[in-house]
Amino acid sequence: MKRTPLHPEPAPADRRLFIWDRASVHTEITNETATVDASGWLAYDDHCPMCTRWADRVRGILAKRNIGLIPLSTPWVRKRLGLAPDERPDRMWLLLPGGKDVGGADALIELARRVGWARPLAWIAGFPGIRHLLHAGYNFIARNRACTGEACALPSTQRRTPRRAKRAIDVAPLLVLPSLALALAPLLPAFLFMWALAAGIFAGFKWLTFRRARAQLKEVSFARSFTYLFAWPGMDAMRFLDESREVEEPPVSEWLFAGGKTLLGFALVWLAAPPLFATAPLLAGWVIMVGLVFILHFGLFHLLSVLWRTAGIDAPPMMCNPLAATSLAEFWGARWNRDFNVLARQLVVKPLHRRLGVGRAMLLVFLFSGLIHDLVISLPAGAGFGLPTAFFLLQACGLSFERSRAGRRLGLGGGARGWLFTFALTAVPAFALFHPWFVSRIILPFAHAIGAA
Image (cartoon, rainbow, N blue to C red; front, side, top):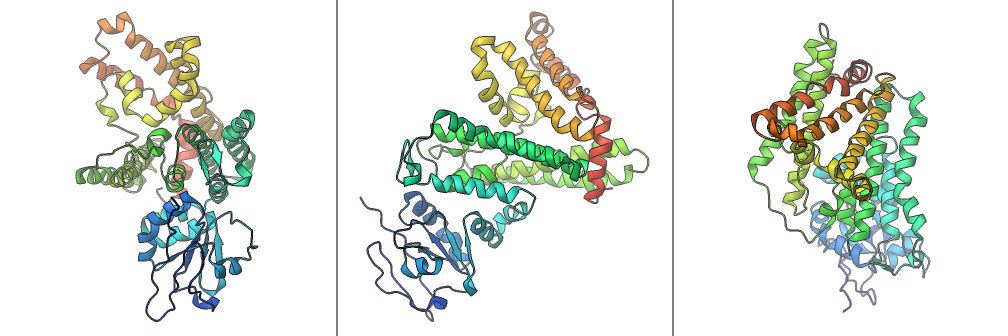
C-alpha cells in the first residue's frame, strides 16, 4: 500500500496555501520569496519511508517553532536547491528566510538551536571535531536510509559491503579519532588533550556498538539512531535502539533525585573546592573530580536516562547506587558504569570466554580497562604510567579471591564484610587510579580554566 505523503502545515490566512500530493502539485506558490515563512521550511525526502516517519514525529515540534514541513519533490523546492529533474536528494534541507539554505547535519544543528531541550547539541557541535562527527554520522545514515535488512532501494547501497570493508567501517573511528587527538597533543593544553583523547575513544566505541546493534536489528529509525549516537552516553545499543521494548515511565522523585545529584556536583566544584586551593591543592583537585563525577555520571547522565525513558526509550541509568554494593562482583557488574560492562562483554568476554574460560576473559577485561585509563589519565599527565592498570588488576585479583573458597568462607560475597572488602579495594586504592600527577597536571589546570580555582 502506497504511503500517503505528509502535507505542509497550513499557512496563516495572509499567506498562500498549497496542497501537495505525490502525483502533482495542485496549487503551487510561484513567488519563491513567499514560500518561506518567518521561521522556514524543512524539506525532507518524501520517497523515503524512514524520512516520512521521522517527519511525522517531529511535525508538532516544528509547528510550535513556526517551521513547516515540505517534500523535496515540490517543484519550487527542487528549483531553489538546483536539483536536476532526475536527481534524488541526498539530505534534508532547512529553507530559511532570505534565501539561506542549510542541509544535512548543519540543518539538524540549526534546528537544535531553536528547540530548547536540544540546544546542548548545538552547543556541543561548536567543539573542535564534533561537527565533523555529526556530518559523518548523518551522511552514513542518509546513505542507508532506504535499507531494510539486506535490501536497499538507493542505487549507492545496492551492493553488499564486503565483510572486511564492514569491519573497517566499524573500527575506523576508534583508530582515527584517538590518533587525531594524539596528533593535536603538542598544540593543546594537557587537560584539553585529555578530554580530546577521551572523547575520541568514547566516540569510537560508541560507533562500534551502534554498528553491531544496527546489523542485528531489522529496522532502526533515523531519530533513534541519531539520539543514540549524539544524545546518550551509554553503550548498550541493543536496548536503546530496539523500538519494540516497553519502558516504564520514571516517577517524579527520580527526576528530583537526578537533579539533586547534579546540583551537588556543581556545589562541590564551584563552592567546596575553591577555598582548598591555597592550603591543600591535591585535596581541592579530588573534590573537583568527585564533583565532576556527580555532575556527569550521577547527575546529567541520570537526567538523560529519565528523559529518554519518559519518551519511551529503554535507557537505564549508567550508575546504580555503587555505595550499596556488598561485593566486588556486584560493584563492577551491576552498579558502577554498567554500560562499560556491556561493552566489555561484547568485545572481550563473548569472543574469548570459550577459548580462555570466564576467569581469564574477565582478567583481560580488567587489563583492557586499565590500559584505556592509563592512556587517558597517565599519558596526558606525562607520569604515573602503570598505576591505573595496577588498580584494575588489583580489582581482578580481589574479585578472584572473593569467589574463591577462602573468600566464600570469609563471607566476602555479601553483607557487611562484603561491603567493607569492596570499599577497601575500590575507594582506598583510587589514589593510584587518579594519581597525584594527574590531579596536579590535569585537574588543577582544568579547574582554573573553568573558574573553579
